[in-house]
Amino acid sequence: MTTEFRLQDHPVIFLKPHITHPYAWVGHIPFMYVLADLLRPRSFVELGTDSGNSFLAFCQAVKTLGLQSRTHCYAVDCWKGDEHARFYGDHVYRTLSAYQKPRYGEFSTLVKAYFDEALEQFEDGSIDLLHIDGLHTYEAVKHDFETWLPKLSSSAVVIFHDSAVHDRNFGVHIFMEELRATYEVFEFNHSNGLGVVPVGTDVPEAFKAFMREALSRPEATRAIFEAAAAALLDPETGMPSGGADAVEHSIECLMYYRNDGQIFEEARSLSIIHAGGTDATFEFELPAGQRPHHVRVDPASLPGTYRLVNVGLRVGGATMNLFAEPGAPRFVVNGDVLPSAIQEGIRFISLHNDPYVEVDLRGVWEQLGGQDEESTVIVGIAYEQVLAAVELQALADGAARALQGAKDEVRRQRESSPIEQLALLTRGQHDDVRRQLTQLAEAQENLERLVGGLATSISTHEHANQTGNA
Ligand SMILES: C[S@@+](CC[C@H](N)C(=O)[O-])C[C@H]1O[C@@H](n2cnc3c(N)ncnc32)[C@H](O)[C@@H]1O
Image (cartoon, rainbow, N blue to C red; front, side):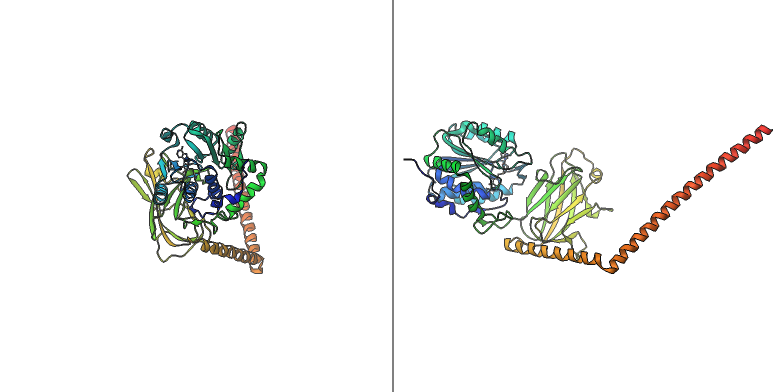
């Protein structure tokens, strides 16, 4: 008798996950729960764990299904980040470990290593489920698959995140196409895509039944898991909805850096978690040799009132406080600058979740010298008010839209008011007169040059005549 895949046999899909920023993987958690039930693997290995959304979901399912004595879960990550995810500090590993150890420590291990280094810790033919979610270039994904292939058991399944991303040099989709020549492949399209590939020749019957169902009715299968995902993440905003235990968004201070001609992007960013309290000083150590023309400081990805108290640069032993410099560099604020009783720094409010200050550093690094030395950007921030609660963020967003609408209306009215029209007219006439005066001055200069030239040629002529007559 062939087994049939029936979702009602897997109530584990309804578990409530613990999730934390970044949320890109969260939409696949319902499938991860079901997958744990379908495969009941002896060994699950994840390449790329970051803050742990996918890994913790799998551990949660293992525990709920009572598989602790059968299944061991390994999370492999250098916990430094990469150019597609972001670069981050040790706090990500520490926070994950503090959550994982007491709950799932008896059957799961965090392996802090590069993927290639970790290989030797696993026996050939030992892994039943492999999740590949490291760097997403075509070369990196192919390399991760090929190097870990010998470690897979005969009943192994491999899942690949980000198979639906086609920009930023993501190449998982290309590799998925290649795999289709050899294996069955099913892909979810939501939450950046997830490729599901049975690699072993002897995968469990329950999983085979799922693949039969998914490949014969792909749209229906996708729709079910997409709907389950929507209970965890709002498809519009990508923010947690009620179905997940979202850890209150940690306050993460980010610094982006770039040179002229580049854009601010994750690949050139550094992140530090704000440890709490009002005032904080962050030291962002730039990769060796970097002397960016511009930096951008995002105190948090949350609405709030912030004060940038200090921006300093350090190169070797030399430091410079940019606010204390005469002719301080140019600052651009994304938010509304507020009056401050304290003279120091830039105080601003943002009702959106993207407050930041950009600093133009062109010509500044040169004053510090030390071309080959390590450089650090030191940022002091006062967190006056931060809206961390999700409901308050929605409220602030609504208020921001209303305020923007009111501002636009005031501008429209001002532009159409008679006084403003008159002012515009006068300004126009003023500009015309200034233009005419400039043209007049130029004409006069030309005339003077002409007269000067004429005078010189007359005097030369007279002189020649006199010499001839003599
Ligand atoms: C996209 S994130 C993983 C997301 C995670 N699965 C989740 O649920 O949110 C990619 C992670 O892979 C790690 N990484 C990338 N390449 C690596 C490598 N070669 N060795 C070790 N870790 C790597 C990065 O440190 C980063 O934390």
